[in-house]
Length: 221
Image 1 (tube, rainbow, N blue to C red):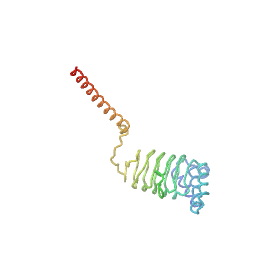
Image 2: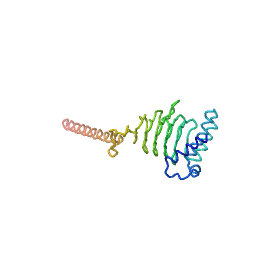
Image 3: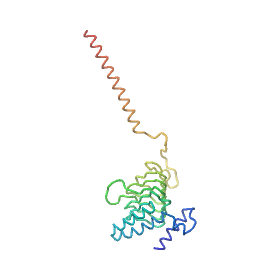
Image 4: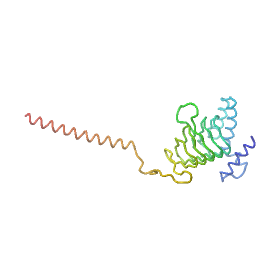
């Protein structure tokens, strides 16, 4: 247990240049506290003491603002930087040396049973506010950009950005994709324009019918 705690502390020093001393890290890093709280809750969960495990998890959430379900499986060297708003679901699996920033959600997409949360590979970085939703894998050495919404599997050595998440770099090479964030299609506006065209067409037909009616009336008289 102490060896694992030492590895957790070392992960902080390796990835946070603001860390100054072991005492500071142990006392003030909420991400570290959340990981330690989860390790306790996870042991209770595996032992079948699910209510106690959830109670420990909720207490840790109250203290840190980070919610990790006690059923989630976490590897070595996880670093949660700042961490407020991080949510990690029950069937989520996280590999070794993963870095997660504040506001990240590793969640599901509905009420499906069984494995419903993502599997995160080794040495993955998930940036601020990213959402990874569903039962699929994020490959080793991948990076998920800030605010990205990832809904499908990501190959190893990839960089993903945007909503819906798109791979822009894979194996060190830029992937050709449409990154035009200015001229983004607006389905609501397109529908309104189509309706306007149809209304204009109906008005023209109505005007023609009125003219025909007037001509018929004149011819009768």
